[in-house]
Length: 456
Ligand code: ZN
Image (cartoon, rainbow, N blue to C red):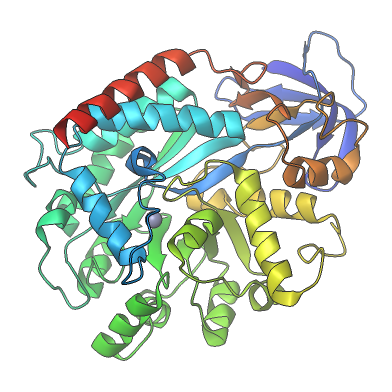
């Protein structure tokens, strides 16, 4: 056991002072004691809050962030962005994927993300053939996470079709192709490869009901029961309409009818969820992974938060397209969307935690546990020691205490000096806002971008 001592820490129920964390060799908190002694403990240099899990990431998209912002007369939307993504993928090697993911994961940790769910469907080589080692691309992401020191939930993703009802894949989609049997094999192999890694786990990914048929999904779920399942669902009205035209039900209704939604499910976006579906999802204790900056960037729509939280729905946040890699920006945008819609202030929150920033941060973190398939998101015994040490001397946080400190942390956005150190599994990964591998990672990322520019 190692001991860490914080002057103040946000525990699940409330803030506590002079908090001592005992952390075991696997990075799990063995005991939390308030008003404790400092004897033999490493001193943490500021107030401590739980780190934020990122529930939905496609790492390679970091290299494309900001490239699809040109107005076109026919109205640019999600579908033209998707075409731009396919062109980029014609070039990407496993080495490039690792370089991009390493750069991204370091940025994530610096911004306060301590774990990433990598929703991974880039399985094949640029020509669409399987790699000799089929898990090559997944392994590149695991390596990147190790270099960055971030916890990772690898989510290898089923992708078999180019539209509802088993439409054939388009050329741009051939890198994604994987059968249910191949996916199950890959997940079992990655289970073995990560068995000794304390910071890695493996979940099931299903791209969407556009890209995987119910019978194929059933095959995967049967082979890997009781495991976290991630799926894109109800992101776009066109996607919902396509599904209704095909089977007479919305994607969410179809999933619930065929597989029974429960707490294993991480429903990514769920933007166009209906009132009846909100009832089903909240009762099932499934998680909704909101990706506000990506959804805003793509013009997807706005999640019906009032109705969902009235039913105590569980949520977390994801960076998805990496247009923003900052949990605070995603939470702010989400809250501001609610305010703009309702023409009111300070909407998120409840009787226990009336402070909006604190409520958003703590609930998004705690809601992430099931999708991450790891005990993360809270500072308590049995959970991973993933946390941020805030800088009380930062202009945004100066003289702030308790949940007001978290409000200022989430909403006051000037400068970037609020996070002092980041600990993942009890180990200090960020020191004074810096990552030891950041220069190397940036140089390698630059090299990949130069290669791409030359090839384009
Ligand atoms: Zn996505």
